[in-house]
Amino acid sequence: MIVPPVRLGSRNIDLDRTGAVLLDLDLDHCHLRSGRFIGATIARNTLVRHARFDGNADFGRVKFSGAAQFESTHFTGHVWFTAASFAQEADFSDVEFNMVAWFRSAIFAGGTLFRRSKFAGNTSFENVAFEGETSFEATNFTQPPQLEGADFHNGLPRELPHR
Image (cartoon, rainbow, N blue to C red; front, side, top):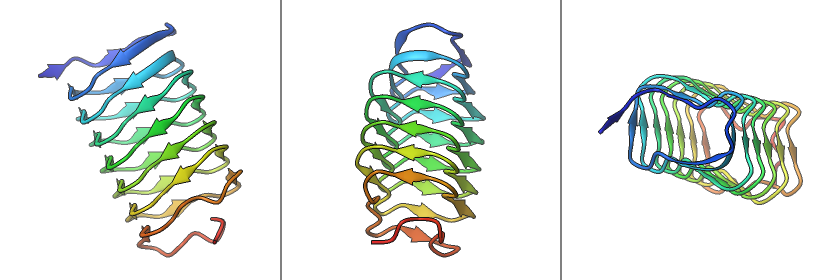
């Protein structure tokens, strides 16, 4: 099933695109209660900038084929990117993760940015492959992130807290 581009504007809704094939995902400046995108494929670009998720957001097993831009988004509930794949740049700069933030077994093929982001809860990068340049510059973790099995192809970023 191919679903046309998503552009919601500013509506407080629950969005479920589980298993969908999306051309683009545009949630810029949206205010959602929750989002479920489990197993979805996004063929082009993902724009989730300055958005807010009041509940949980699940991007597990999503295939991001184009650039994935999440800058300045606020995740109030749990957020999962478990086993997601990012084919191009993934930008999570200035993002606030208030609870659990799991990226377990994700693959980042392009550059990955977590600059100035805030992780307030349990954060897992276990078994994640960071294949491009990765930056955690000025990022704040209230708990040390779980890094077991993480593979940083260009070396562990010096600004990442070490256990």
